[in-house]
Image 1 (cartoon, one colour):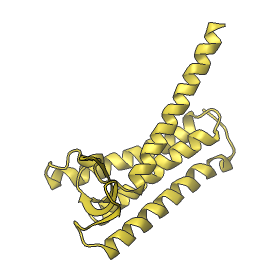
Image 2 (cartoon, rainbow, N blue to C red):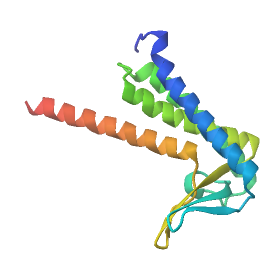
Image 3 (tube, rainbow, N blue to C red):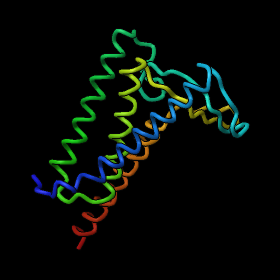
Image 4 (tube, one colour):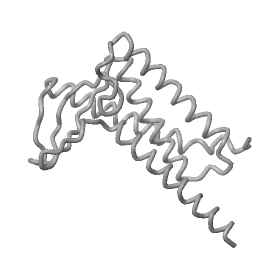
Length: 171
């Protein structure tokens, strides 16, 4: 268990707070200026703003399950994810560095942003809609993007550590 300064976690929470703020403000703007189901072409043939409600997980996974199952399930999963991120950061990172703080802050902020939607609306507001030549990526939001970037950064860190350990054992 590490004994770091109480200030060591400030970057984690600052990034998470910034993600939650950007996510919630962007969703508020979309919900207050667009009709549900409306789509506005921003870059024709590539990117639209499309106001949709996602009752499932990322990319609509489990969206077809009954609402009685979905809402409590995703709230509990979100709360567990938030608790695990905070626990992991405070108890298992021997040396808090910028990359884990940024990565986990992005994931934490995204989880909180989508949890707010589930508690407030019962579903997640999605609006970023990319498509190209008949291929369509499911609509997502700022919280989803932050989670994806955070996971990619954590994978990058793990790969870097693995390469470093491999180089040390090869000597």
